[in-house]
Length: 500
Image 1 (cartoon, rainbow, N blue to C red):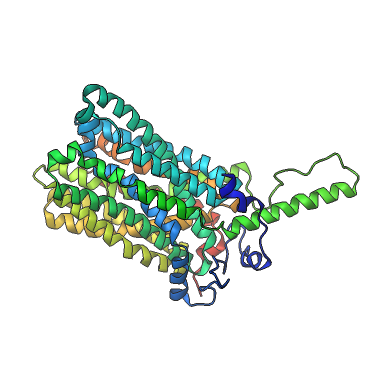
Image 2 (tube, helix red, strand yellow; image 1 turned 120 degrees about the vertical axis):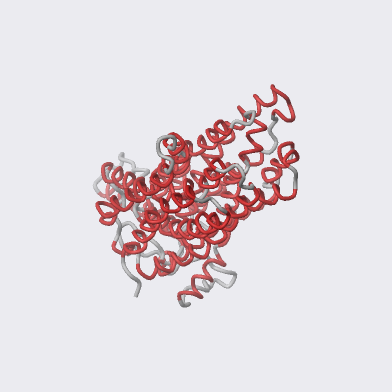
């Protein structure tokens, strides 16, 4: 941590870099023209237009997006291999496996706070690296566990306990990674195309889910069911080792965000100014505080309200990602056992592919019209599509309906909501508290409405056959209500404004 974070803690910014960080609004503190410099010292996208500038920025900041895609691939692989994992660790019980899957979500808020505190204290870069190595190590080790298929009853019991532990550590890591990737890119990107930057980040998450669904579909197409249960399920986990090492190395080469570096310099200047003032008064015994009071911080109540608002405003997106885009396939298979699992997995691949261009469209819309327009639009899409699609599937789960509903419609909505919610979360908090606050609020919402969402609808579907659809409608309504009642007033004007 000392080596990785040394630049963030001790390096003073150059005059050019300091000028790049403009405090346009109290909680934005984002660079309007800063960026990573090439060998010539010139930042290519500073003077370019919207499309060329945003693309140039992405070309220079592709490492965080690669890391984000790879880590979501690792996390999502488990969900697409529930059948063979249950045969290896729980004697075929899906309930046990989904419980273990949910455990990772329960740990995500803890990881978001712990790694977020590291990010606020030492820098976004070391926090990103710690989160990534935790996810990589936990993923690879899952592929090497003993199981009922390889070690009999004892191997299965030991493997189940170890799997639970690894899912806990993976949840801690992914909880920290989510905030790290969002904050790193929002604090590095110029404001004029920060929405498109979040769109590309959402694309990288989609690529992770796409890779996981594609590998699962490929395994089911190339191997027999017996081969998958015996050894095939281990392949995606073990193959994560070598690209994981590459990702960790690349993350060690990225620069700290200009926002955090500017904050370090400002805090140091405040400490020195405070010390000079005390010395002039003759109070030489009083030491300057290690952490001076910051002008861009929040009081406890305001901070709590913002985290609570974020928790509620993200509920619609969180439930849609998991109850809408992922759980729907398991729900359909349970209702109609004649549906071929290979067809379902390939529709999931189609859905994840389709979500990516819509993520970029939402990014452009956010830059063009501001969050004041695009966030309500995204939540309205969740509200208007979730229940009708589930109702349609309840009446007819044919292949054509599967392609139109979970494939096209859910693909469109899941792509749109990712872009807007990421920027919303970052803009709610000042830089000094941003990492841990986003890590807590974002992950709590994902945990309660996303990871545990399938469990809630499983409990309710006995009385309400369309419980997943009602759940999506309820959470989207809550997101819209809290946004209009509280969230919009908490956001800085820059977040809500239309671009010129």
